[in-house]
Amino acid sequence: MSDMFTTLAYYFSFPFVRYAVIVGLLIALCASLLGITLVLRRFSFIGDGLSHVAFGAIAVGAVMGLSNNMILTLPVTIICAVLLLRTGQNTKIKGDAAIAMLSVGALAIGYLLMNVFSTGPNVSGDVCSTLFGSTSILTLTSSEVWLCFILSLIVVVCFVLFYNKLFAITFDEDFAKATGTNASLFNLIIAVLIAVIIVLAMNLVGSLLISALVIFPALSAMRIYKSFRAVTIFSAVISVICAFLGIIISILAGTPVGPTIVAADIAAFLACSAIGRIAGKY
Amino acid sequence: MALITCSKLSIGYEREIICSDLNFTVEQGDYLCIVGENGSGKTTLMRTLLNLRKPMAGEIITGDGLKPNEIGYLPQQSQVQKDFPASVEEIVLSGCLGRKGRKPFYSAVDRKTVDRNLERLGISALRKKCFRELSGGQQQRVLLARALSATEKVLLLDEPVTGLDTEAALSMYSLIEKFNKENGLTVIMISHDLEASLKYATHILNIGEKIFFGTKDEYLAWTRGESAEEAGVGAEAPAEDAGTPAEAGAEPPAEAEVQHE
Image (cartoon, rainbow over all chains, first blue to last red; front, side):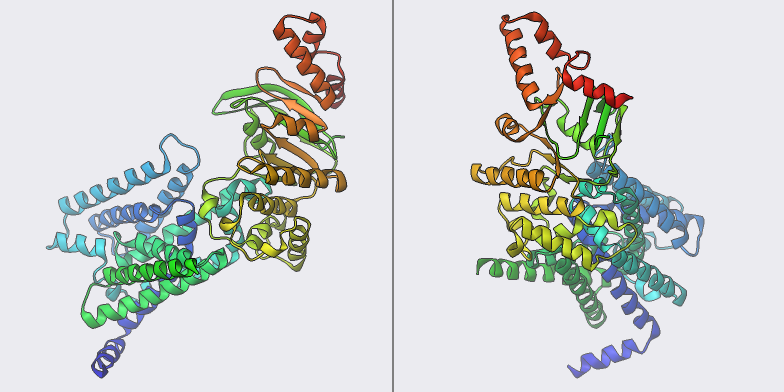
C-alpha cells in the first residue's frame, strides 16, 4: 500500500503528470456534459464519427508537417460536426448513414495518407497511439495544457449558460422552436462544442475511444436518476471519478491510459445498472 | 382584426403542395377543429401555423397583438420523450423559456407561473415525478401545463387524445373546454374524433380534397349537402354552393373577404 503511494508521489512530482491529470479530468467533465444531449437525441455515434474525422485531419497535418495539429484538426472537426448535426433534420442521406460514411471514409483516407507519406520510422506505432491515445497525454506541452484548460472552461461555461435551452431543445425541439427559441443557433453551438470536446479528448483516450467518454457517463446516470438535472450532475461526477481512477490505475499498473479510463467507465455503468435495477424493484 | 388570418395559404413540403388555397380566420376565444383524412395535411398545416415550416404560398397574418411565438403547442407524443429523464417540473418550466430571450436562467415569476399551471391542471403532486413513468393522460396534462406556461392566448393541439383511454380522453376534452370558456383561450385542435369535434368546437376547418371553413352549424349543413350530392339526391345548387365555399356567397367566405381588405 505504501508502495503505491510512493509510486504515485514519485509520478506526481513531474509536472507533465500533473498536467495530464488536470487535462484528463477536464476533458472527462466536458465530454460527459454534452453526452446526455447526444444520447437522448440518438446521436451517440456522432462522437465516434467526428473522432475519425479528427484522425483523418491529424494524418493530413502530419503529412503536411504541421507541428501543432490542433490548428487543422479543430476547424475541420467543427465543420464536420455542423454538417452532421444538420443532416439529422432533412436530407437525402439519413443521420446515421451520414455519420458512418464520414467516419469510415476519414479513417481509411487518414491511414492511407499516413502510410503513403510516412514521416516517421514507425507508422503503425504512430497510428496506434493516435487511435488509442497511448501516451500522447503525457507529452503535452504547457501551452497545450493551457489551450485544453481554456477550451474546456469555455465548454463548461457555455453548458451552464445554455443549460435550460439545451434541455428544452433536447426534450422537444419543435415546441422550443414554436415558442421562440432559436433552435438552429443552439444546434450549431452544440455541434461546435462537441467538435471541441472531441479534439480535446483525442489527447486523452485516442480517437477510437472517445465515444465511451461521451456516452457511458450519461447512460450510467440515466440508469439511476430520472430528472435531467440529476442526470447531468451525476454523469459529470461519475465521469470525473472514472477518469481519475483510470489515470491513477494506468500509472500504477503501467496500462495504456485511454482503455483504462474506458474500462473504469464500463465498470461504473455496470454498477449503475445494478443499482438502478435493485432500486426499481423496491 | 382576427388573431390569426390565413389567406390563400398553400402548405406542403419539398416543393410538393399538399393543400392549397386555404382561407380561414381564428378569432379570440374560438374553438377551431381541423378535420380531414389521413395525409390531407392537417399536421403540416399545424406546423406551418407554428412557424416550423414556411407556407408554400399565401400568408398567415397574426393580429390583435399576438406575436408569432405566442402560440402554445401540444404535440403528438414523439418517440424520444418516452425514455427521457426529466421531471414534470423541468418540463413545465421549459414552457417559460421562449419569452426569456437571452436570459439564461428562470426567474421567480417563471416558477410562479409553473406553480399556477400545475395547480390548474391538478398535477401539483406530480411535480417531482419522472415524466416517462406517468400515465398517458398525466403526460398530456404535463404537456398542456407546459403549453400554458408558454402562452395563454392560443393553443394548438395535435390529436391530444390519441392513445388515451376513454376516461382520460374525456377529462382532457373537458379541461381544454374549461380553458376555452373560462379563460378565453383560443383553441385550434387537429382531431380524428369527429364526434368530439362537433361537440366542443365553435368552428370547423375541413381540409383535403374538399375544403370547408365555417361554424359548426354551417359545417353540419355542408356535410349534409355533400352526402346528398354523393347519394345523387337533393338540390344541386345548394350542394355546389357549399362545396366551394371560397367562391360562394355563404357566411364564411364573406368573412374571409372582409379579411382581405
